[in-house]
Length: 162
Image 1 (cartoon, one colour):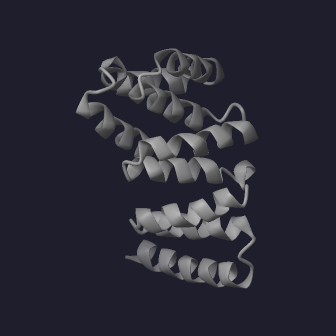
Image 2 (cartoon, helix red, strand yellow):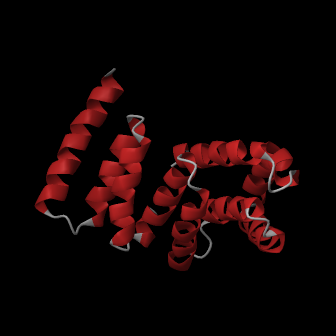
């Protein structure tokens, strides 16, 4: 209960800061974090979208936005934020991994493999852990309904680590 109260207090602060300066993407990110921690994924997604629109790529806004879109099942919409995150931070491991999974869902196997190989080159331990965790998903046909649930699970796991 203390965590919820602290998050509500932080959310109130972030909302006031956003109201005072709507062009400051950092406060939109803070607002998104608070909503996310409160289980308000759609509201978090909306806040991260504002930071994303403001170009807060070096602060991971594109990643946060894309991962929330994935959690909401909006897989096609999630690709662009991850691509933008990779333009801002080319070796953004989590964006590479999630975009690789999205490419697999879209039956873009070569692109998926290329991104997943980059993940392996950047962080072998992470790659091995995630590959073991999601090997079944990666092996499935792109039309298998289980792949979508796996994508949502992967987005949640990586999002919660931040």
